[in-house]
Structure formats: C-alpha cells, structure tokens
Length: 412
Image (cartoon, rainbow, N blue to C red; front, side, top):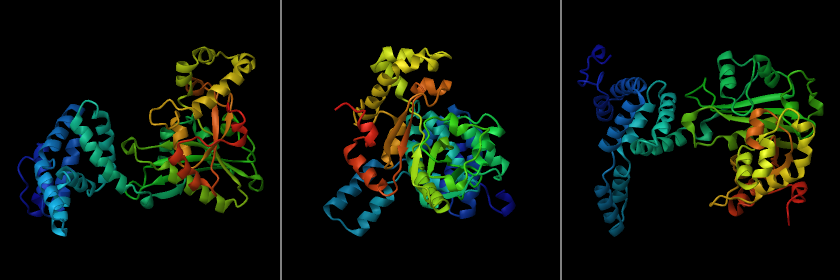
C-alpha cells in the first residue's frame, strides 16, 4: 500500500508487530500513520492470546512514561510554578502508548476494533499485569470517546434491519429471547417499546438497549409481561412504563456506564409520546439474593434450591413471610465493607435516583430466576420530579430509599 503511494515502508512492519508499533508511533504523516495503524490492528486481531499478552508487555514497558523525569518536572513546578513548567508536566505525564491507542482509533473502523481489543485485554488482566495497565488507559479513552453526548438514541421495532434484530436476540442478558415470535411480541405491539444507544462510529452495533412494557398498573410477575399471545393495551389506557430488561451489548465497554442516561432519555421520549404516563418503574431481577440466603439463612435457602414443579402450588406459601423478610434485610442491611447495597441491580437503580417500590414473591419462576433470586423480582420507581435529589441523597447516605408499603415491612 505504501509502495503504491511512492513511500518507502519501514522494514518488517508486515510481519513484526513490534516494528509496526514503532512505525505507528514514529509516523509524522497522517496517511502513513493510518496505514501503519491498520496493519498493526490486522496483526493484533490474528494473534493468539499468548502472543497478544507478549505484545502488550512490550508496549507497556517500551513506551511507558519516565517516572524520574516526571518527578523532576513536578518538583520544579512545585518550587516555581508557571505555565511553561505545567505544560512540560502535561507532555510527559502520559505514557506514549496512550497516543498509540489514539492513532489506532483514527483508522477506518478503529473504534469498534479497539472495543474488541479491550474485550481481550479484560480476559488477560489477571495473568498479565501489563495488560491491566494498558486496559486502565484504554478504558479512560473509551470513556471520553463514548461520552453520552455523542450517543444516538434509536427505537428498535419490527421494521429495524434484521442484522440489528439478530444482535438484540444475541445480546439479551436478562430474559432470553427464544424465537422470532418472542422477539416480535416484545417489539411489534403498540404497548411495547425498545430503545438502544448507538455510537456514530459503530452504527450497526448497539451499545445497550432497554425493553419497555406500557401497562395500566405496576406488574408483579414477568410472565404477564413476556406473554406472546395477549391482547395489546390501547394507548389511551397506558399509565405506567415498565423497564423490564436492560442489556449491555459490548463486553469491551465494561465499566463504562450508559444505563442511567438511557433510562432517563427513554422516560423523556415516552412522556412526549404518552402525556398521560404517570409512573416509570422497573421489573428487575435480584441476582445476588439466593447466594446471600445460602450464607445467611441456609435453611430457608434449601427450600427454594430444592423447589420442584409443585412448589408454588403449596409449600411456597409457607415460606413467603420469612422469605420476604430476609429479602428486605438483603436490600437494607449491607454486608459490604463500603456500605453500598448488597445487590448490584439495586446499586445501579438506586444510584440513578430510583426508590425500591415493591417486592414480588414468585415473580420469576424460571430456572434462572429460581437460581438467582428464589423467584423474587422487584420494582424500582423512577419519580422524574425527585430522581436527581434521590440520586444525591443516596450517594451521600447510602441508605436504601423504600416506598411506604416496604417501610411497613422493615423491622424497626
């Protein structure tokens, strides 16, 4: 490619990834940098994990920042601060491999290729400390490049291109989509909605999506929401928007949160479409509950671990009061050293400003629901008028905000 343009290509870059790294970072022309970066990405994507780990170690050590130089520059600035010394610190305080990532990102398709690279780095972190170091830098860049201000909210419906619908099926992480009929039941009826965030550099790759049921009341179970053969609710009867599934799609963007922005954007969109909407709630799983019960109330946990087909027809009622009391403890009495709630889904929604509105016994009796939460699901309520103040209060106090009904169930 370079020869066709009349340039002399540095030796070895087509076969030696380390030479390709050097070429990318030493290139002074924009076009040559893009060509070398594309070559390097091709090589990286063809590597086995062991080869990638070795290359990451080379990059992390060969192009790291100079700690002694940085310390001297910081000391000089501390003695006599001025703009020139501050600019000098800025110039040497970042490893050169951060610039490598920027140049890789500038290639055609570079953003999505870096997301895939980070997915691999996350797998290598535990056994390759240098990969962990590079990952921390790449994550900070991705957080800037995927700033919510750049994201595009798009509705997903039955007319969405099939290649994206196939990805919705594949990425659904909460309630598996079993068939195209199942997907149609979630997208096509007038009382169902789905929205996804996309990035301009990844127009065919959803980042995160949320499925919404439009209802008359707060649902107490997931089967009624996912039922395929049902009569759609007329728009004039809609009063409640239920966020019943939120799925992150890109493993390479782990730790970069979009869900809080997605829920609030979708709530605004729905409020414009349905002015009579007066409630925004979730129907959420409780993924850590059974694990916590096995450690804290093992006798109670056994009953749900051993539940058979007839469990919900008789025995379950005997355990309901004790199970709900234990669940309230799980939500409100954290075991974590940092004081945040035990449940990861609770931390997400409460951190966004929701309150814990309702607990639903036997709401998800699927094998997954029983294994994770003994069938329990909960509703978090998003009151758009107070969601920001709730968010601030929760982050200050870490106390779980409860509805009046749940406060009555809480031991005093």
